Image (tube, rainbow, N blue to C red; front, side, top):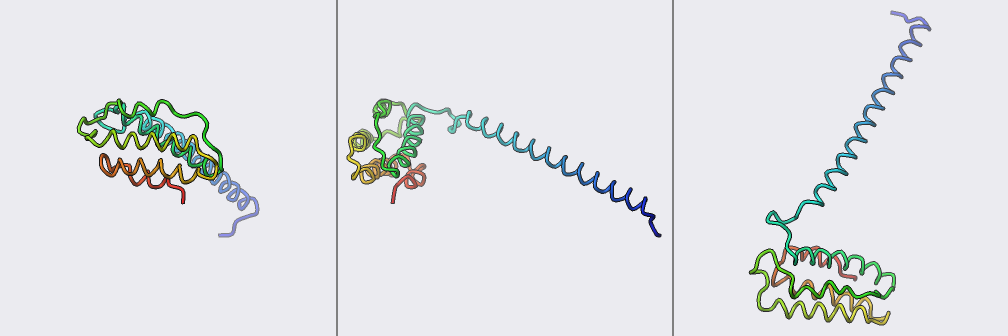
Length: 160
C-alpha cells in the first residue's frame, strides 16, 4: 500500500501528537510521584520512631546527633563553635523509653560527654578535630554499653 504525501503527513502528525500526549502524561505522573514522596517523607518524620512513643532521652539524643553532624561540618571548616547547647545538660534527668536503659554507669558516661563537649566549645583551633572526635567517642562509649543501635551512625560522625 502506497501512502500519499498527505496521508504520510497525517500519520506522522498523529504519531507526534500521541508521543507528546504520552510524554506529558508521564511527566504529570512523575510530578505526582514526587509530591507523594514528599508528603510520605513529611508524614514519616512526624511519626515517632519508637512505637511506644518517643521519650525525653531519645528526643534529646536525636538533637545531640543533629548537633554533632552540624559541628562536624563546622570543625572541618576550622570554625570554633560558639554557644554551648545548655539543653544537653538535661542528659542526666531526661527520662528514657525503657527505665532499664540508664544503668549505674550512665551518669559517668553522661559526665564524660558533657566534659568533652565543654572542651570542644572552649577549644583552640588546632585542637578542634581532636576535641570533636573526643565528643563522638564519648557517645560511642556510652552506646556500646547502653543502647548499641545508633553506634553505626555515631561512628560515621568521626573526622578522619
